[in-house]
Length: 203
Image (cartoon, rainbow, N blue to C red):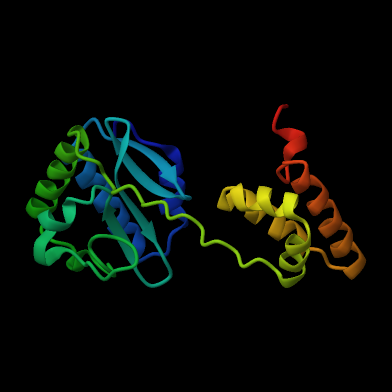
């Protein structure tokens, strides 16, 4: 078998007896449909690469196996064969070879997955990075800022992330005297227009 990875042989060898023929068959189909497929381990599980990108992966568990295509557009290709509710794998729980689509269908799926890997279509939608919710200003800091206009003005102008740094620094103090010391230092630095990590900003 071309482009094989001995770690996959070891993975299959350590799998439970029911899983071995399933994994071997899936591996054979992948290489038959896409001869230039390369093997590797991803997240300690067998993965198949095409064009340097993940195309599919498989895994064995105590009572079932899984096989999943990486590209998001394979969901529509699989149709009824796909298991959209499965936590892992495109074909749901596989406990025997009979749970798999026919070889002809599987070869078609794998070839389609290879085509998608070669396309410019993103394999997975990029997660939307949501800004962290602003932390509530603790009562002792709020009270101190009311008495120190210079510190309050700086705090007000700061970005939410800079405010968060000071708030977390104060609230994470485990001892009351440590918290008070940090509060006093916060007011001092704010009055001077300094951020919590000002010492490292020019490094």
